[in-house]
Image (spheres, each protein chain N blue to C red):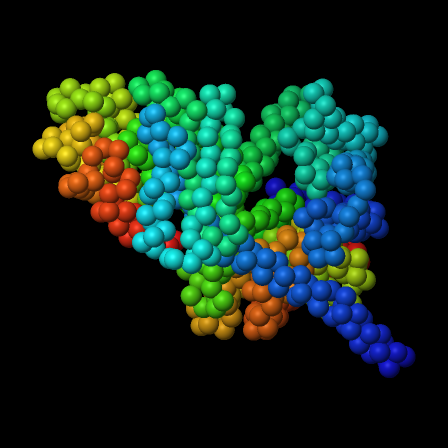
Length: 360
Length: 277
């Protein structure tokens, strides 16, 4: 079972590597859309950018991801099976999922990056189908139904992420977010819905000094916009490690990861489902959250109370969320250092394994 | 080659600093400043609702008394806005709120001001319409309410049935409000009191309520029986944060004089006119 998973993952990774240029282009364009065209984008807000055709841009972005997901579905199916029908079936079912008769996109495929994830699931399913006798194909379709059901449930729950945050303490949320990122579904959320954030903001607006903020250590003062560097799993640290190791792919990942969109790195490295990267994706956000909590308890920095756009670059975001307090920048730099150190040994092993596979 | 690379790095860092970091810092400072300003300018009005047969001018004498007793300069006096809601729910506004006045007075009166429970129920709906409009217009989130006579019933019905969560009443003062209408016996509960008791759990838990009764005779203020005012205890006690029942006596303690009774003026001044947030 383990061996089959490893073989599957290797083929998946190889298929994704051949699509790398396309993934980087889509990721880069998406980053520009999210940060500079969307109304709540960081650069849109900062420079007061105005764009014509407001309603067209989201559709274009969505279309871009759909196109990528079709290519991924076909390519991954080709890599997994010799059956000539599999890539066509994978792409066709991926397309069918994006459209339904009511003219709305299907719930399962609403978010662009998640479409690509679904493409991988579908391609795997069709590839497996094409090799099976009829009786086992029925068993597989039941299994696939289970996967879809579980995924739909996870998606539904992620809509309720605000309630999750209330129910689960910070540490668990970081684990959950990191784990889902590793699986390919990058979940990150806004601090505005956090009631503690509202309490803190109300205090900050009526007081000049932030030292008496009522909830100094809470979701919005340690996780967002601080510990979630580059989105769930602190993937910015991964990209920095790849930069330091002089991997050319890192340059292409810089733009999307700096605006906290982790999907491009997940697909292009590919970091998703890489066993070596599970531990840092779960552990590093926890570690830097702990560091921020220590820094807050030790009064090394004021709490991050002012909301910033989700696409604000990590270090800048930490500095802005405290209304330009330089101590915060120092603390955030240390956090980035810790995260890079946390990722380093695992990335080294992952790269070594990839090299060994290439040679074999 | 090395020098070229180092030079490029320095130029890149400089461009990033000037093009992104500096504007970002300035943008954040401006937006925080704006938010602080908005917070400081937030108003907390005191909203007055008159009783049956009374118009939007019902509280003029009270406002004059409050101004006389309070700050004397015109700049410090409370500005007054009067609103009359028509039977169709249309608002007629007169007067205006002065900029910088953090505790303005607003009167909400009703064109249909007949006595009786059916009208009071309708008035609670009109009050909700007016409150929605005023909140949209002036952006306040906290306020205090004063209700004279049936005006206190309109407030209570509004709080139980219509008040949105986004608008928090901090303090309610009812003046001679007959919670059991004209009934002077505790044993006989009118339909109004039964309804008020049924929904009393919906009253805001943080609310502070003062119920003032006037007594001209031993049993009432000449219009409303004391027992009917005291029935308010069954509605509020144990539901809101604090409930205080006060009885004023003396020359100006008749039902219609309650709004200018010196003790009532002092109560409003000490309980409602000190800014607490």
